Length: 338
Image (cartoon, rainbow, N blue to C red; front, side):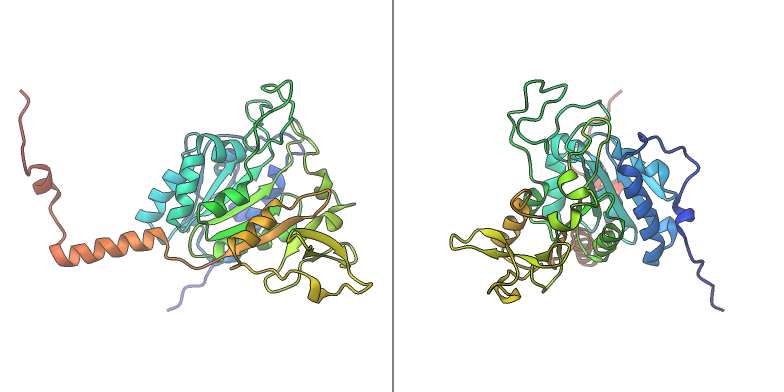
C-alpha cells in the first residue's frame, strides 16, 4: 500500500506567532520567500531545523513552523553542526545577521566553511546592529556615523563573500531581500548543494540604516546596477541587456556597452568553479563604477563534514567493536570521593 504524500504550502510553514519586526523591515520579504521555498523541496516539515543566534534576524525560528533553536550570540554554527552530525537526514538552516555572524560569531563561521558541514547559512546583511538600536556592524562602511561611531567609523568593513571564499566555502551566493523570484531561486540552489551553502542577503533596515542599498535595490535602477550571475554565460547586465563586464589592459574589470566593436566575446564568462582571483574580483565589484553581482558565485564539490565523521566512526567501530562507555569511564586511574 502506498501512502499519499501531502503537498505542503506556504501556510504550512507559518506559525501563529505575531511577527515582531518593524513595519517595512526587509526581514518580512526574506521570511515570505523562505516559507515559499521550503514546501517545494520535497522534504517533510519535521525534517527541517532552523538555528539562529541573536539579533533581529534571529527571531526567524519563531515564525517558521518547523523545529528550531534560538541559540546564543554567534554560536548558531556550533549548534547547527551538532544537529547535522547527529541527524544527517535533517535539512538544517542557519539564520544570522551581519553582527551575529561576523563579529562575535566570526570564528564559528569560518570554521563552519572550512569543515563544509551540509547546512545552509542565510546571512541577513543590513550593515548595522538593529536589535540594539543602531550601532555600526562589521559590514558598515568606513565613515559610517552611528550611535557608537558619532564621528564616523574608522574600521574597514568585512566583505562577507570574500571572507567565506578565503575560508574555503564550497557554495557562495548573494541575494536581495525584495528580489523575490531571484531570492527563491538562490535559496533553492543553496539547498541543492551538498556541503555548506552561504547566502548573503542584502536586507534593508528601514529604522536604523534605511536606504543603504538604494543604489541597486530600488526598481528604478536595479537592472542597471545589478549583475545576475549565470553559469557559463557572459557577464551581461542593464535594462536592455546591452552592457557587460570585461577586463581592461590592467586586468581590472570594467563596464562596457555592447556595440561599436564590443561583442559578447569580449566579456568575461561566469564560472562557478573559477579561480579564487576571479571570484574575489566579483566580490569587490560595487556601484557606482560597477554593478553588484547577485546569484551563485561559487559551487564546487568537496566531502561534507558530517559524512566524513560518520564514515570514520563506522570504520573504527567495525575494527574495534562498538565500545563500552562505562568501561571507558572506569579505565585508568580512578578515585572515590567520600
